[in-house]
Image (cartoon, rainbow, N blue to C red):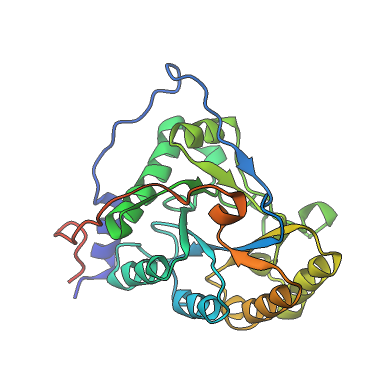
Length: 270
């Protein structure tokens, strides 16, 4: 059995280097930022920060309701994506028809990184998804705007915002990806109670907007087992179709799909 230290080394150093675009010589190709769905009567329920142990429960809950979700995954946040358990989770979501997208490799604040570092954060998780599923993602999501634990919540901080700048958008555009934010935040990552998250969904549903693009986190147990089932039931009762981000935007989920790569010594954990 491989040690945790060895696993960390594998996850950080398995791929070597890539050829990076040069910021000064490339034409600006700022990515499109999507903050809401465009297909009427659709809801895209999204999950950040995985893969994680609740992936199966989330997928099963969505499947049982005839719904689809979108998973914005990290490469090395809560665990290494090349760990066999996480490989299986990613494949499970993908094989059940749910969308996979990039949430960057190590969940870093992209605004603090150099041009090369931004591309490295994006490239590593893209390569992981191609190796595991064969699918090259067409969308990415930056981490949420950092709020310090000591910062009291105010009206301006009640909703987390995707943290990006013009360099992040240029890098995403060059990589052919759209940047996906949201217009409903369940609040699970900032400590919202189950009832508060349910109330957030209920309030938005009662206003019956044409579409909803919802942010959740698959690392939160109560999201998977209490908030999600409630949200699914309420949204379906209101007549919404629960679809992937790609479907709610009327765009392809992936830039390309090829055969996945077999595991080899660089990513083997046994």
